[in-house]
Length: 456
RNA sequence: GUGGUUGUAGCUCAGUUGGUUAGAGCGCCUGAUUGUGGUUCAGGAGGUCGUCGGUUCGAGACCGAUCUUCCACCCCA
Image (cartoon, rainbow, N blue to C red; front, side, top):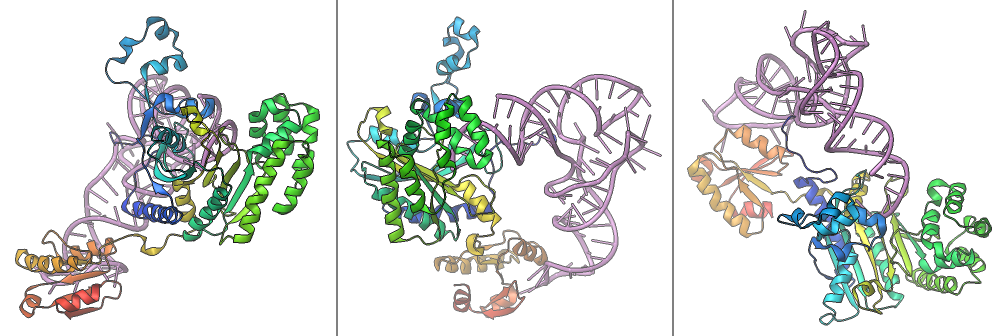
């Protein structure tokens, strides 16, 4: 084990089988993105630090990978700052670039930077890795892929409706049935905060509420109390903890709670619009569920909030998330540009599909036949046939060395290649090929046309 | 970032209260079978016990540090 090379924690190598499975997911997501009218863009893996810093809250800043400046960067640091050893102050002096933390902020930057070339509303998709300096856990990596679709330049709620449809389309195509698309609305959350007199503590309030199904009602109340939310306010939340029934009846109960809040009523209206449309249009395999405790940490959401939970019984964090952000480009100087988008967590979807055994067998694009190498004369003859097969879009190859037949057969077996072709002196003399089907062991002699037909 | 956990052959794991030369299964290599894999049989290779340091006559085992794994927080895909 000593001296063995390694990779940083939270990162992974992918073997051919894993890449095939990942590509299978990528392709399905991409196909659905394009079916819904989204167009691909790509952005650099690293951005200027100021583009990313401060966009994800204090916690987010800590999780951003910073890239050290080139050259003798320490020499430029002034002595007092250096001796102070304050990382927060020192970092901007020695690091001006940082690895992408998500795809949404770089997209906002892209929109602002290219606003004059973009035709709005602009629907873009992006499937690229992101990096977080987090401590790894199951389904939680320091390098992972996000697959994002966003629309910018339209405030229409039909976009939200379409994103619910898009989630359903992707998970249906992946044959991952029973996912729950949870939806909430930031306006409802701020409405509730308003009603209980905690508007100034919206973030603390939502973070605590978000933990309801994890730590329970009492603990949530305790946390709110400790964050300075009044006991009277918390008592007003009681009906919220007792929300019951389907989407429509929960809405009804919310209306009572939020009757005094304009913002809350607006949120309810929006949810109702989306739910009515989805109920009318229908979903294939997913279900849409109202979850007023759904908050999500990102502070830029202003309207709808989405989160996708894996089917019941699979222990995994959310496999997708998203929402409406009315003014994301505002921080880069472009006002009144509403955006809404969703994200798919490729690596977590992979783990869920693996756990549920949902990858099709045909995912691995293996070669169809291996030609046994009996020597240079026979190999040349085989290569001529291989060329013709390849021209017919049949994936084949020649075993490169003149090894024992047994060893070559074993190689085919190990690689799970379905057919082996044997061409020796006898076959060459008769212009035929011996085709062996590995699974059955059956062998037959065919001419080149027969071989093409058999392997097509 | 906080607390805990894990590491022995390519893989999965044994290894007694510290005591000779660290084991098993699977895999791998060779042969039985010089044109036939998956089965069988015979033989073989492979480990500075994650790393560095300490305690001890003696450490895979005990202690410390560090890296890694997984878990709970925090947060999130």
